[in-house]
Length: 113
Image 1 (cartoon, rainbow, N blue to C red):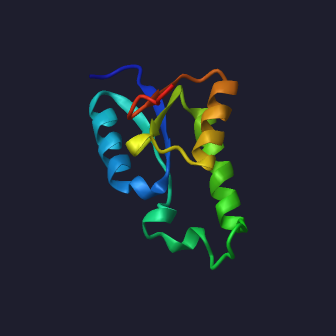
Image 2 (cartoon, rainbow, N blue to C red):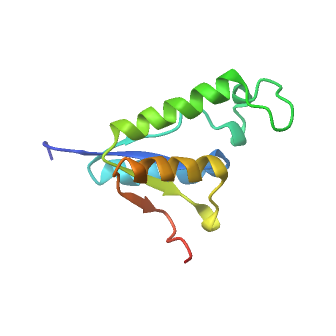
């Protein structure tokens, strides 16, 4: 299949690394260009945190959060990896950003309510 490909940015907690990888594979095989996270801070990529204290964002984390908003800008839609319905504050802000930009939002698991 050659032609127009929808661009989808994955959003969600990086603790769900396996689910990110599965969704990336499935969505790619369905003919989409998939943009994902660059690091899995909650799944072993400690560079994200740079020994930060509780409640303090590092420059790296701030940069990665901003980069992810740019990835949403490049996408036609976002796909939320919300295993068990979990949506943290960073993911919530990405969903709000996508919606404010008029991007469709799809979910791994349909949210309650």
